[in-house]
Structures are given as C-alpha cells and as structure tokens.
Amino acid sequence: MRKPVIFITGAGGEIGHGLITRLASSGRPIVTLDLAPLDASLAKLVQREFLGSILDAGLLERILSEFEVDLVFHLAALLSARSEFTPMRAHEVNVEGTLTLLEFAQKEAESHGRPVKFLYPSSIAAYGLPNLATKQAAGLVREDDFNHPTTMYGANKLYCEMLGRYYARHYKQLAAEHLSGKVDFRSVRFPGLISAVTMPSGGTSDYAPEMIHAAARGESYACFVRPDTQIPLMVMPDGVEALIRLAEAPQESLTRTAYNVAAFNPTAAEIERVVRAAFPTVAITYVNDRKRQGIVDSWPAAVDDSAARRDWGFAPQYDFERGFSEYLIPTIRQQYQ
Ligand code: AKB
Image (tube, rainbow, N blue to C red; front, side):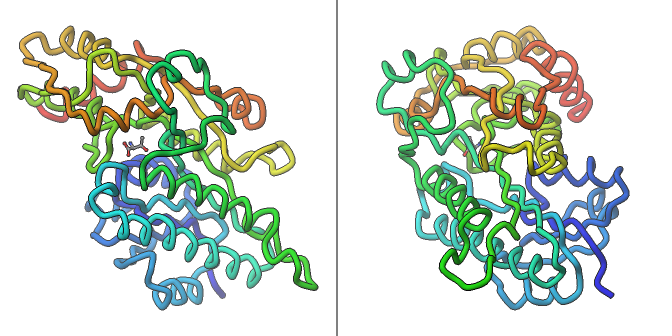
C-alpha cells in the first residue's frame, strides 16, 4: 500500500523552512525533494527526504511508485536576479520543472482516483508596469492587469500560472475521456517575502531582508534601490499561512487559479527608519544599481488582494508595524546574539 503524503519541492529554501515547520505540527507525513540536504532541524520533521532535481523524471517515477501524493507544494525555482544571468537555466528549472511536476501530479491523481492539490508560489514579478509614472498612478493592481513581465523569472511565473490553469480546467480537452480537474492547481502571487530565520538569495526584492539582517549582524548596508522605492512585502509566517489556507479552501469557493495576497507596502526609506530605530548604530547608504532598480520599478507598488480575502479568507496577521516589532526584529536579534 502506498502511503498518502504531502510532497514539497525546493523544500530547503526560504518558504520551505517555514512551511515544513508549520505542516509538521499537523502530523501529516511530508516527503521532500531538493538538490541539497535539508538542515538537520528540518530533516527530522519529514518522513522521507529525496536528494535530486525536479527535472529527473526517473526520480519522480520512484517517488510516485512509493507514495500516494495528494498535496504538492512546488517551491523549487530560480529567483529573479539569478534568472537574468542564466535565462536558459531559469527556463529549464522554472518552466520545464513545473511542467514535469504538473504531469507528475496528473499521473498521481489518475492513479489514486482523487484530485491532487498543487500549490504554486507565483510572484509580483508576474507584473510588468511600463514606467514609474504608470506605477505611481496604478493604485491597487488587480491580477489580470499589467501582465507584461520584463524578467525571465516573471515570464516563467506567469506562464506557469497559465500551465496550472490549463491542467486544472482544459487538460487534453479534445480527448474522449474527461481528464482535466485532476490537478487542482492553486497559486498565490507573493509579494517580496521576508523571513527572520533565513536569508534570501538571487531575488531582486532582497534589499529589504538584506538591510534588516545586515543591521542585526552589526554590518553596514548599501541599499541598491532608491529610498522612495516601493513594492508589496510580507513576512514569512503570513506567506506560509496563505499557502496553507489556500490549500484548505473548498474548491467550490475558488473563482480563480492565481490570487494576489498583500500585507504592507513600505518604501525602502520607511524600512530604513524602523531598522535604525531597532539598531541605532547601523550605517545604511544608498548606492543605486540602475538595472536592478529597473526591475523593481516594473513591479507594482501595491496589489489588490480582495479576491483572496473573499474566496478563501486570506487575512494577514502582520502589518508593517507588527511585522517588525513582533516578528522580524526580536527573532533576528535573538538569532545573531
Ligand atoms: C525576487 O525578488 O525574485 C522574489 C520575488 C519578488 O518573487 N523575491
């Protein structure tokens, strides 16, 4: 008998850390896949840890034969900055990897006769606003507006949202048997996520977490975007909770396959102000990187998450003030003490 499990790819990354810890408390068995071994603290929380690539079809076959996967969190991805240096590799990992996983989920569902929920973290990088004036005038950006990403990563995310929707609603629509709907695809368009326990790498929204972590380590920080730069941000516990809440939502209440979620939208200068208040001796300067600035300027300043609130009760616990005073500052302070 195969055992029903939750399957997490890219499990050792930033979201994986929070997600495994949170899911482990539910008692449901977790199977993970990552290129690198999990930290010891996480490894002990999972039932089985596979080392390898999401592109390895043979390895996925093995997992399929051993476990009955009914919930997938597909977290493995190359982030926006890294993807600009290796666009072909980004396409392989972000698009071909996701397609391979969607096909894996389809096979799983066909084999055990129940839909497989497929949770996919998309990103504000799926948006592309043409210039700063448009960004400033845009207000709360809705899911179907400004879908013209300028980065490889953003294009990958938007296309994978479409692939997921295809599997969920139109898969092999001309075949005699009805095959769509077996992959129950659900996606969250995340803002820049900030974790107190892990450092991001390879993203363009990294200036926010980098500034906080550098200050807590007693290091100076040269911020690569202008002080007035504004994008949506969210602390990791709310990001993890969003994924879990969306996974638990009844299918009938969902009206979309990809949802915006929002928490707070500070400028870089506002982040600097709260970081300085907590770490008064920190030296923060601004050394603008025109190219990375261009990417961040193409992302919305704020997004409309009313569909997520209405359909599946999304309700972040942390606003800007609470996110810093109750989560980021105390947790990070303790970590570097
Ligand atoms: C990145 O900067 O690439 C990510 C994102 C906004 O998706 N943090």
